Image (cartoon, rainbow, N blue to C red; front, side, top):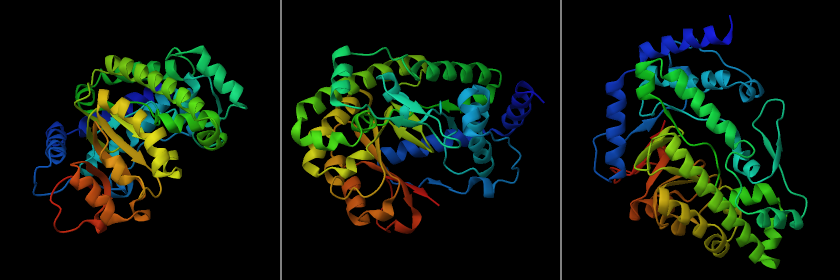
Length: 344
């Protein structure tokens, strides 16, 4: 069976399972949580979707194959959607152009490589002179590198989904993984950026300024291309208030002072325009109070809350009216009635 026939078979099956009323209910519950209204049941996400689904018949393709073929990428992206409509938790139905963390570095002029089984890996630039050349070249075209492929793939998704009325209405395409400004700088520059924080901070700021403006231009174009706006959107397994999800995985390796000089202002420059949430991996106890008070921030996703001071994480987000996305249910305290998205 060719890929066109596979698409038709499985998207037809998924179309039959979509429950638009349930999806409307899910969104309303999220809207109330982000408004910090008390609700009867906190929204939750199951982490074992496939195990809970009764029908597990959905194709899956190796990552390198989907990287080269948008039809295979679409089917891979819809796999969890297929399981989610059966399980009926509080997960939005969404997909993305799945080209990994190297999208914005590639737009900026960086290179990358595919491995045998995983997402692309960025190649760091070899010297500070190369960093200066990128800065001197000015604002790049957002269709450089993988930029154009993101828009082409999103266009393909929309074309295919338009043939299925319920899928077209229920499935959103969330913005690609552009990381956060400092994470992109790290991917381009490599470990020498940590030395440059001390001996060449002006160069770091110059690169961060260029990355942030490139990020802004990409997102402006994305928002006009995918007419979702910045009011209430989706990302990963969540609805979010705002239009952007920033990543600060590298930032947790910085001191609070460095975070507030080299990370937070550039995050806020994007959050103030688009509104949205911040993700970080690892331990962020030293940053969480400051991060939670960021302008334009509506939510924080800590992917490893068990590595953090849970009481500090909860108080920092609750006191700032910032939703905590993806808190394991075992950490929930009896006094919290809203502002939390649980995982089970």
